[in-house]
Length: 90
Ligand SMILES: [Zn+2]
Image 1 (cartoon, rainbow, N blue to C red):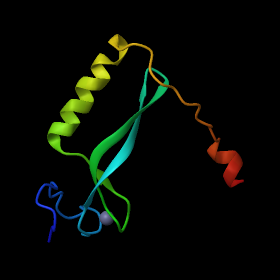
Image 2 (image 1 turned 180 degrees about the vertical axis):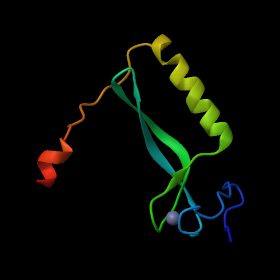
Image 3 (image 1 turned 90 degrees about the horizontal axis):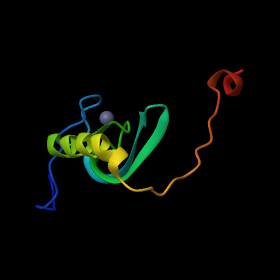
Image 4 (image 1 turned 45 degrees about the horizontal axis):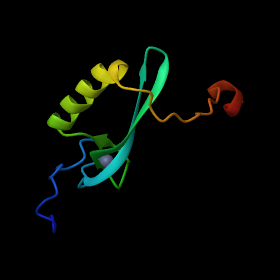
């Protein structure tokens, strides 16, 4: 039940069965010990449980982007606070 024809249908969440909505997310991943964040990645996000999926072609574009990262000029960087799990839970 999509009211926007240009929106890709991500189908139902494989975790809880809720309809996925398209959103722009910040996709983070680790590359050689550095945290990289790719902003505004189109993804399907589950409104119920927060599960995220990306389309196959977006996944391929991400993989290519990551592969080419070293060749890119200096990027905008942010500082990320690191929280030690055990300390916060204790
Ligand atoms: Zn879900």
